[in-house]
Image 1: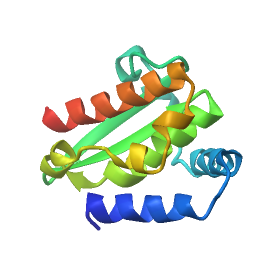
Image 2: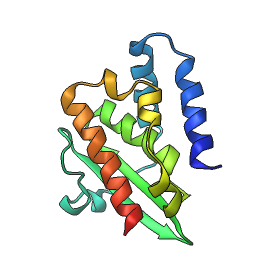
Image 3: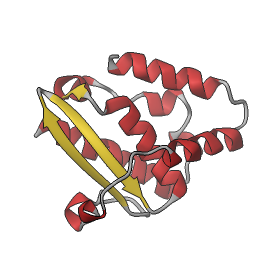
Image 4: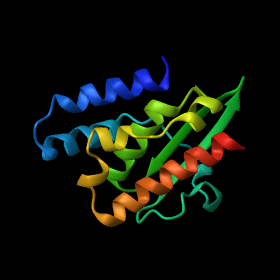
Length: 134
């Protein structure tokens, strides 16, 4: 499935909910479904800089695609990084780099986050892009 198709699926998933409280609950559930992240990778070099809470992101490149694993010590942030990697993990690096990440605006996520969480979201996106570029 392409990034665009995954983004469209996320938009449709969020359209089910009318209230942002319900959307936050959904984001928290996404975080609970995140694949187990190894304790050995919870190191400073895997920390995303610019996030208020601690978010670890690890990536592996295989056959031109980038596979992400992540974790966070905060439930909303864990859900946000889970949402991002559900879209971008497994995609070709070129497709990640071509993405405008507008899905976060299409679902209203950025505008419904506190300023510090919104800054963290930008840091997560920048880190995903940087990993895809290297």
